[in-house]
Length: 361
Image (cartoon, rainbow, N blue to C red; front, side, top):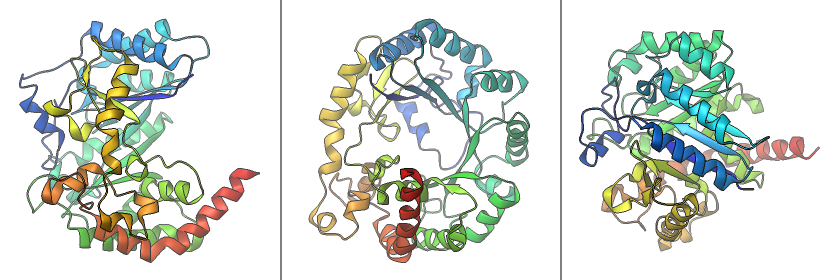
């Protein structure tokens, strides 16, 4: 049995918003048509090969975009139909959707609730902060959060930390508490021009201040994915965040037409691995490991001798390319991480020890 995760773009970069920091819009250079939608044949082939390859193991389908809900309720109904038809008895199958929430309606809610989808909802903070980059969509997105909560559907909040909100850690933390957003993912921005990107020094200060609020005398009130991943690692478990791993080949990205890439930050012509209709899942993962996976190990001397290398392993490949476009450069946020680890490591290790003790009973 094998556990497998795929990140799928059923409508490619198509979206009903025009967020100023969207990194995936650049794939328009590869797929220039006005509208995109995964065909039934591609969808069935994708699900068939995935479930067959996992051979009874867990298969996780993460539907993203663009805005994946543009694919429509019927599309996700077909997803479920194919998974039920092609899966083996007892096989574990999971689905998640990352959305801006604007298109969420009762039909989607009913389907997602019945089949236990996990939702990720993009919210950047309070109304003024969120609307700064996200097309005045705050009220609609908050309505979607209310719908998810009323349906008792599991969801988390994805927040982009940009130059616009990086100096507001306290406001952001209190916004989460006020709205009972108990599961949070923070993503630093490097897209767009200098007015959008998060300065490393400012991000380091943000992480330190946000951590102090989150720590709450050793009793965190919310789950923050970045901090949780660090606790996993410090407790001796495999971290969920790929940036902290030795290799970057844990999942594949499937575009609307079946083209396959090793990472959604690297959906570029030179990184195309093949097509789901023409290649086996095993072959695609092997190609990803042989080409993309090995890049993580290409750290420079500064990284190898750094006290924190055992945590970050040289950082994210995407962030290494920011300054000099070299795979062995330091992570763009290296300065931020160093200051944060210096500031928080003792408290993180204490929490990790408690986590390990609780999970060993």
